Image 1 (cartoon, rainbow, N blue to C red):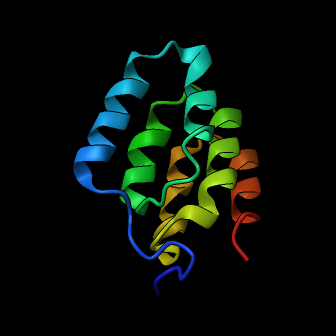
Image 2 (cartoon, rainbow, N blue to C red; image 1 turned 60 degrees about the vertical axis):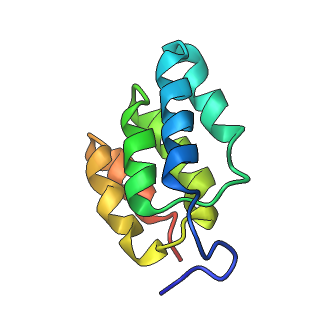
Length: 98
């Protein structure tokens, strides 16, 4: 199922540039940087790579919650639950999806 609001993810070159910039930012700035990029559309696999660059469950959850509407293949989004480490955050994650 394709997200009609976000039918195609950003191209791989643009994504690679974004990931490289993210990795150069300090840990404290990474979430802010990602939240500034919510105008783009992403595949679930791209979101996995970006989320792995965040340090903790609260940051990961906040990003996942904000980015969900921008995911092209929302049917694969539940696979990202494994990025969260505690059951508490995993249960919050399940509430993101309708």
